[in-house]
Length: 206
Image (cartoon, rainbow, N blue to C red; front, side, top):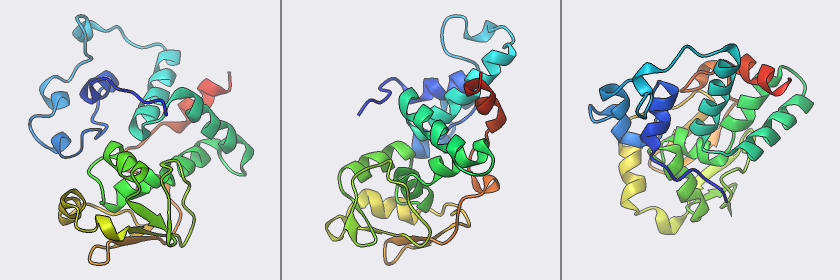
């Protein structure tokens, strides 16, 4: 599976905002975005104003980086969103939010989407009683996500659950049982990072 292996904090600086790619570090004063709020590189502080195309491209890159997916997979999500009923932009982010690695992160089992993706790949979770190790697995309404028995004593998982994070309204979590339920469908206002989805739709529609 292809993935970005460069410094995560440079990706946030390039987009000009925190994308919360490094988990707890993003909430401390050690976050490079807070210390150096400009693009990385020798000319990072002297970047020219973006064209409209550049603005569209940056919004698409931001979405890819937040969800940790590469171009070909992101385009497949967009094409699927186009085939669905409703607004393409809304459909796109509904699909991305319902990825299992994102759901695991939003439920608080992981400190970042990258950590959630690794946990899912290593078989930490079951969906409706069956082990699922595909981060891109798309959860559905009433799906039950549980930590498998042999990982329930894992200090990382327990430490993440001990941190009080905001759980979106479409998810319900029982920390004692180490399980969560998909009780609704994601809405745009429930997303932890907001996107100008119309810019991405315009970019791919050219």
